[in-house]
Image (cartoon, rainbow, N blue to C red; front, top):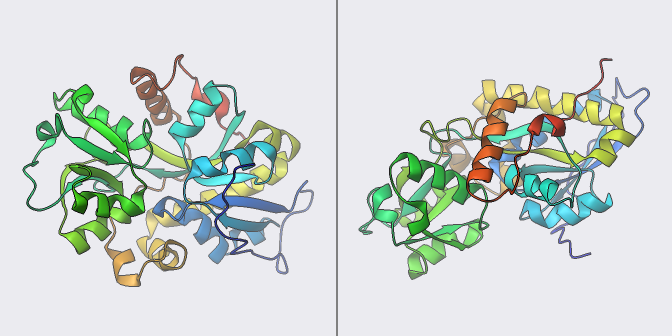
Length: 316
């Protein structure tokens, strides 16, 4: 089915101390997760046993890109994608290939969480200098190019004059060194890694400014089929993530403690990262702004009303 689930089951949390779960339709949830900062909430929820408290067992399967897990989500091989970027999944919804349901927010833009980096000797010093240049993005026509286009327009730079080249985050540093691209639009932890190893400089902050401040980047995504069939399970998962997101946004140490294991970072690097925002609830106004930016950039043919895609748990 073309799905690359890079490794087998990594982590689970048992229900031996479960205090909840009575009446859950499904007590094991399989989650495809990216090794990005975005998914800190998932790992905090495991570490703090928030899933157990809901009577849930969670199986985590790592993936390199959320788009790789999309076929598995459609077929029910995985129940939830953690850190799934909204652009890819809103496009899938619009194209009729997925009946999307958003369970909880993952990450939202925050200062220096994403940014355009160049080598220290680069003549590119500001957004205007990107015209006529090639910029690496993880996936073409996705959140990196979408958000940078919004920033460029706000800075009176023509996005049409910037070329985007798809290069996976882990390979961006090498592409920059080889001159394959003039700049990269990277997210954490890769931006900090390039800053430390290459002396790369951030010349455009991709996470601040009125065009992108607080812009939702990723979430915990499932399908209408899952939430219709397992509404209590979906609600339990949602509650556990919301508790973890609340901790992540109020106490940075909670994030620092889980990052090294799943993102393969040393503790010093983890504590030096520029973290995204970890909103505890879905900001539908900002999510609609994201969808509207997609329409403006031609990534959607028709406007999507995101309210219809947000899973609303029934009162207990």
